[in-house]
Image 1 (cartoon, one colour):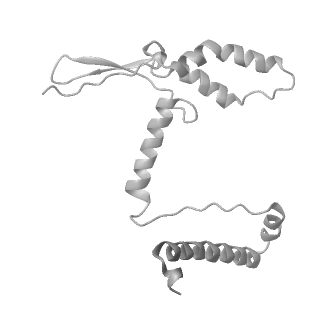
Image 2 (cartoon, rainbow, N blue to C red; image 1 turned 30 degrees about the vertical axis):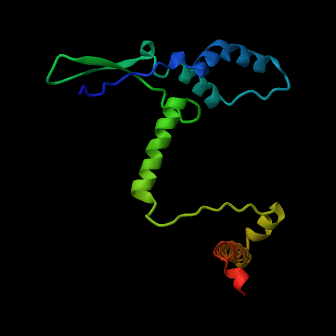
Image 3 (cartoon, rainbow, N blue to C red; image 1 turned 135 degrees about the vertical axis):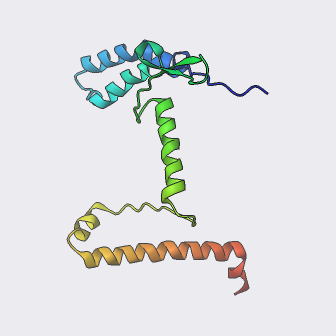
Length: 161
């Protein structure tokens, strides 16, 4: 059986790369010419340009060699941008998720809840620990009761009463 070999990706063959390469300059010029457009933040523009260089040997590479044989290969540099490049963002996302699962999150059922409060209530809660604690308790109890009711409904305990 032949061991798998590294196949470098060719980002220039993807549709996303081709669209950005063909239309980025026109898009940015159109934004700059429109007085009502706010434009893009500099870091977004930098990420778009960096994604055009990511994985392309012409924009930088590292030569890797084997100690035990004469085999060598070229590894193109990546842009290391998180926000836009599908290759780098996907890799970083997978690395971060693996770290969280293996090192941070304990092996217990985990739920995440996001609660948004009306803005006036936020202003009232900011200086008052007591009000914040009361609102937190109401949210926690209501959420907990929701799950209790859901389990009762699914297990048929409500119907027996």
